[in-house]
Image (cartoon, rainbow over all chains, first blue to last red; front, side):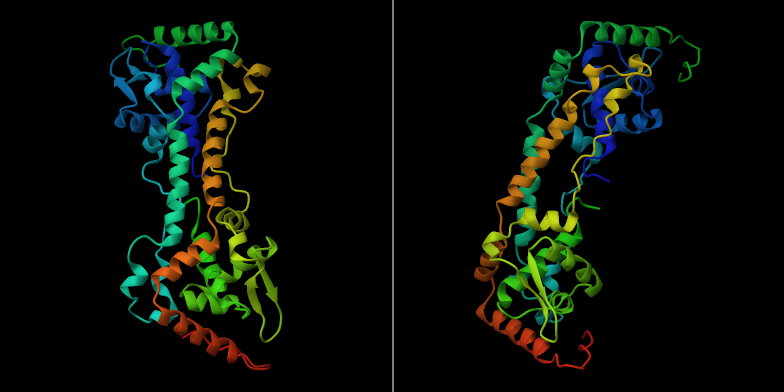
Length: 177
Length: 177
């Protein structure tokens, strides 16, 4: 499994739909079906994004998710941390204390501070994280907008309106196509 | 499992012993026992380092591993790549092609070039790799030498000499302590 998992990929793709949906809330099922991915997977990801303050959830017939703040203020590092949690790039096992010549009791000089190898891995992780933090949802959405033809956004708008408009009280959600 | 696994941690710790061992070749068992880690694990890692030209193996009673080039010329990225192989930080599933409005045939504009999300992940991976490439075995060994007292290196030298000196033709290797 890659360090940045498919949950991150699914999450960011779905968040991009929310950039364009404006005031219309989309459910995790709407998002999953629009993106062509597993609804149960998306249903696990979005509560994490809500907890991190990236999306806001509303209840009711027209309920669903919206972005909780402007897409310029949502960066990739925040999304990754929200979805993956505390997941280090390198998980130091502190084997420096196990040198044969130390016997049972490694000396303080050998175990104090951060292991030199771990230190370098932390620097590599920081470089990765710093890069993720420089990219926002707004940036990717803008780049996508330049690429996609105008009619695509109309089609997505129509698809979304049909979905959200068909949600009526007491009526079960439309099953996936 | 962390992206940079325990194999990398074990590999680098063992390589550091080779920085100090000079012309004395150390077997994967010597290295494992000196470091207090699993010999079978080390025996799997070192052939990969040999294949990548980081260590050179010699056969025979005094055989074992030496660094294949000066430690100033062995960086962390080379070691990670040798041990982990081709392991991307993010494994793009190209879900951009699965948008519901595309139907069965996603248009070329949607699938051409690298996905915008993948592109950012590749930049984050490059930042991590660039950082790993700036650090060498020599740097970590020098830092360790400044930290460890002189007698430690004498003890390691004695331990190593006893191990390698006890290897005689027709005699089985000493079992682990």
